[in-house]
Image (cartoon, rainbow, N blue to C red; front, side, top):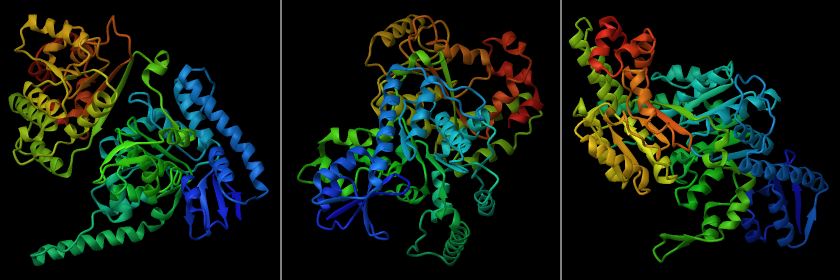
Length: 585
């Protein structure tokens, strides 16, 4: 006889004395707990009803009725919040200690996460503020005594966006795990005076799980063996010191760009899922790229066991051919029903009336170690900014290196900025069908970008200084009327006098030196006839000339931009003078 009870925290159904009904338990996503010697399934009303209807001879613990009432009320409230999101039902909510008010749909998303109380996949379309909602959820939980610490795991390219948002909206102390020196990172991990701990996936794996395994290679020299053993010893020491951090239970944990763990078998996925947390949040605008198994992996982080084991899930929902290749999916409605209490997604069209007319996003790009070394040598060596012409050459070369390193150094094939840019293309254009304007200051960079578009199968039009003015007007009409055209790409030759209101994304692959010129770029689609919110995405390589451009140039007299207008970069640079240019380097 199966005996059902609910765990003290109200999150898990426990099934005892049930060894001969594994198929029913597997369909409910129940997993065997060898320590407690019970089957455990995520507690939802549908899961409980399924088990009670399909298990033979069921006994029920006295605490089940009490928890069922609370769970029913919670799920009804979650249903209402989801429906309210579709209609933008106005709600009141205040996050104690939050410096700025949330838009209504963001309040709904935060309320949904808090009401859920165990884990949530926030899958809002890009540009709706998933980061902000995660921060608000964590801060709200802290105000209610439900959280004293929060771990944020993010791609390296977004790691420094989080502290910017934390500082903008809260006064909560934070630490970013970021140092080339292992001992400094250990000290960062061990800090107890912070609420938010922000780390990228790579350093998380390296510091807490040993990172890439260093195996002996055939033909190693004595020096190579010594270096490998030294690195292994350093890794083992770091893991030993940080063992308590690895084993701790975080009150709040969020993973950004959660598609990073879509592959079940990757070391990144396995290790992230080993971390313990009372509340788990996953943020991604692309929870699945047409592959149900990717959604299973992400939900297995959010609510372990909700969809059952990978093997059982595949047997139940995935169709394959003779060779084991996936050909289709089945019983999709069951998957949708199961994830519903832990999943919320809004599109811009759903919440448009609540959005501002422009949304700005700065994508901070972290250079790879190889890129960083070359960039530092380029900025430091032989470029003493005492002569205007020499300084200008140095600045432009550093700027071009950030865009596409191989333009400046034949030996560097890495491009962290391009990798981040491709991610935006996949999510915004390929996955969600938005039209996009892409600007670069350099014609040579546009040549590189169009090759990327060709490789990705995207349809585009291009405008640069060599494009005849009559042809530019024709392209404007083509872009605005032909739904098959994904992108308009070019230099600032397309930033004046043209109207591209079919696009609602403007991506600045690189900045110009003049704020006026940057505003001209945005206004190509932010003008009369635009029916959607315009998203402006700026790619900026951290701790490079790109990050310093705004600090130095925008701090100059505001009249400068008006006076210079659309003058050349050289003229603007000469107005700065050698000392200001030295600051940029």
